[in-house]
Image (cartoon, rainbow, N blue to C red; front, side, top):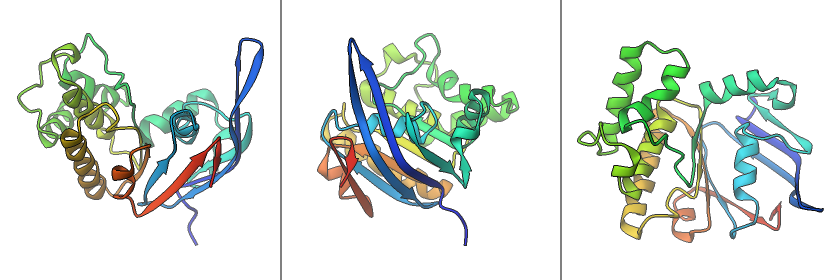
Amino acid sequence: MSSPLLRATGLRKTYRIGSRLVEVLRGVDLTVEAGEFVALRGASGAGKSTLLHLLGGLDRPNHGEIQFRGQSLAALTDGELAQLRLAHVGHIFQAYHLLPELDALENVALPARVARLDVAEAERRARDLLRRVGLEHRLEHRPAELSGGEQQRVAIARALVNQPALILADEPTGNLDSHTGEEILNLLCELRAEHNATLVIATHDARVATRAPRVVELVDGALK
């Protein structure tokens, strides 16, 4: 029997704010199978973003373990963890995190270039993904010249350019109007199916959660 794509056991994460310690995650257990679409629901401050960062290897827990395809992330060096993220994880951030000095095509192609993909292939993938997200006419526009919805589409394309096994989306519709948000959600579902990827979306929007076959609730740092 094959291992799940992700298995998190007993995750705890604490941050120091001034003189006090704030416990954000309090013993989270979560298993995600390959190809699943999971919605992670919770109010602002519940710990959704922190959990996504841990699952994607952007941060490390204070306690507990995360396994990706049976391999413990704790056993990896920071460099090995960076390589795992580059090859297998696509992060879609709520704040987009596009590089302001790069145009849309350059932003999307960047992870492929970092992964040492052939320049022509990296650009081909980036152009194709930007076409898929409806931005083939905005290739040379920088983030400041794009609307919020357009920036989110660029961020989605960038997350998919290395064809990741795991897509982690943090409130991907949170900054968008309802119509654009619905388009973004449809697009994520379509691209997930085409690439046979696993999708975990953190959201406080009930409309988003209803689209996912599986919903887990994060309340005060623990799954309910």
